[in-house]
Amino acid sequence: MLAAALGAIDLGYRVILLKDAVCSSADETHDATLELLGGRFSVQVEITETDAFLSGL
Image (cartoon, rainbow, N blue to C red; front, side, top):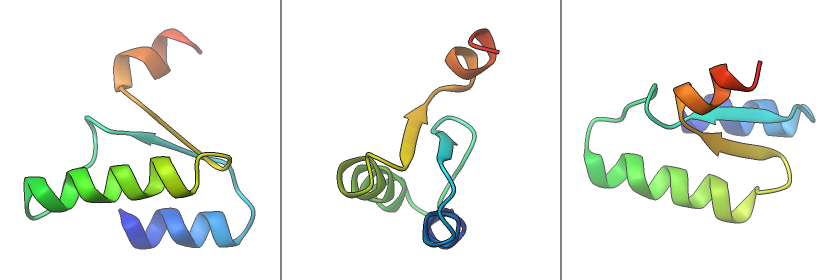
């Protein structure tokens, strides 16, 4: 997840991460990655849940 998101950010894309639809090998890693992306890249990354994303379509 982190590599794909960072690659998209590097290419200038706006990234929408569905936090309940991605996973990591450990909960701590998952939470730390979401915190990093949400805090450091908040201009390019939106973190939301699947239901909220789908209701906004």
